[in-house]
Amino acid sequence: MPRPPLSFRRLIVALAITCCSGALAQPAAPVTAPPVQPSIEQRLASLEAYINNTDPSAALKDQAGNVPRGLTTPVSGVPGPGHNAWMMLSATLVLFMTLPGLGLFYGGLVRTKNALSVMAWCFGITSLVTVLWWAVGYSLVFGKSFNSPFLGGTEFFFFRGVGSTPNPDYSPWVSQSVFAVYQLAFAIITPAVLIGAVVERMKFSAVLAFSALWLLLVYCPIAHMVWGVNGYMNGLSNPAAGIKAIDFAGGMVVEMASGFSALILCLIVGKRLGHGRTPMPPHSLFMCVVGTGILWIGWYGFNAGSAVAADGVAANAFLTTTLAAAVAAGTWALLEHLARGKASVLGFCSGAVAGLVTITPACGYVDATGAMIAGLLGGAIPYFACTKIKSLFGYDDALDVLGVHGVGGFVGLLVTGFFATATVNPNLSTNLSKLVGTSLWVEQAKGIAVTLAWATIGTAIIAGLVKFALGIRPTVEAEIEGLDISDHGEEAYIFDAKS
Amino acid sequence: MKLIIAIIKPFKLEDVKEALAGVGIEGMTVTDVKGFGRQKGHTEIYRGSEYTVDFLPKVKIEIAVGDELVGKAIDAICAGAKTGKIGDGKIFVLPLEEIVRIRTDERGETAV
Image 1 (spheres, one colour):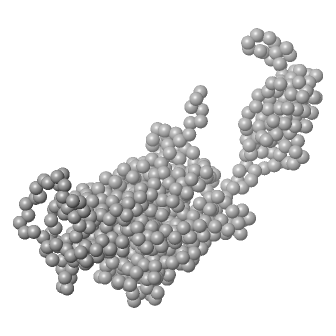
Image 2 (tube, rainbow over the protein chains, first blue to last red):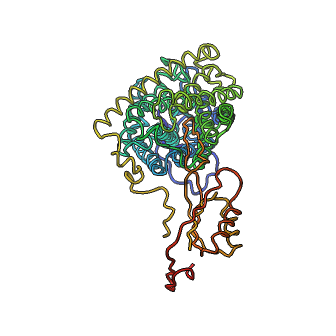
């Protein structure tokens, strides 16, 4: 739909709200035919759309559903300040989850000699993914020029056309630039979560090469399938979706994709030297607690921000996120107390993160009761995955990415299938009214299966490629010395630096 | 002259120092050490991974004394370090051939 240039619309706004002053006396751009003026009712409806987070041009449509040529209102095609403000804050919060939240959470759990390398991985991934996202990533997920349910398009390569104007495919009121940065923060944290499985024993160069390929070949397709308007698994807004699954904030895209990829990657990389013989306790649980707190806070941006608006659905996600995190933290610690008489701080931290993971796909779809159930299951099932299943099979998923994120995401997606309700999220009655409350969980299970298959097969190919082309592990000497010195030439702690 | 080496519980260091000062011994070398005897260690569990911590933190005190002070010093260390529970530590007494005060070049007991 062609619109008059932005500068012209701004001029109309200015004219409408100010008495014509000398400052505005500059000549307007020449316009051949003066546009049709909206009625006061249309302008009011357009403004009301801002409050309700709906399409401001809906009120302009004629009976055939088309907006007459040239008809617009002063608030059409401009970002809404409240929604935009919340999304800028949310993007900041999600970035804060990686730097330094995840860095501290993960860094505290490794040994002193590798603490800094975890920070380097988080930082390296942040820089690398930002460039990839700008160049192609955002477009491959949120473009649609390929007209494919599996991958986006090329129209937003190099952020072409990604400006302050909202992209109505994703939000009528949030600047596309803000949306792109918000989604960038997700694309950063997902590979950063993934590499927790292979800390202390993967080369920095291999981590970066793996992350780049994984972002493009695993993250982008899955994110498009789940969140793209024409995505294969976007049951919410794509009436033609092959699998009518729903995933509010990334149970498939972020949590399951990273969790199950982590298992495959840690099997290909192999165990840490001395795993099972040498003690490898966390070097600073204190740091881990600080990181957990930052993750929890950041998760409000992650979950409530996924409404892409400061609306009622966001408010619901804000509530359910809190409930699930607190309940899961307590559940994990209680199970530890029952199992061995002591509730540990690492148990509280692990439970909180597992609860946040579990509520991620559900937060904008379930009510408080659903959130309490997500919290209980999200504390209990990942607890067994981390403490029992891992030791049963003996794989070295160093920081329990599978147990916390893979399993938590899996549980959360099923919880969503069973407890999603249109009372919380009216959008569920658009395309899914027949499934919600009945067989939505079957669609969720199909989504889980596709994510699992794509992530594990993709990771196996990418990790194999990196191993073959670059080598994936440091030398034995480097690994024993620690990656801080061997990869970065630094140490995390130099306590005697004064002498 | 004797060299007394005492391994004690870290939180008893202040008591031992005061007890030694009570019998006139006001110089010592203190080191943080790790080890175990009959007390053994403990286990720590992190998300199901169990680690046995064999080596417990202790403090090692070294003092050089003249022969006539050895008995009093040992009594003072025992008085200060005793809790009556396993892990209170040990005292070793070794013969000491020579002491030199570097600043003045004094030798023997006067250099203590």
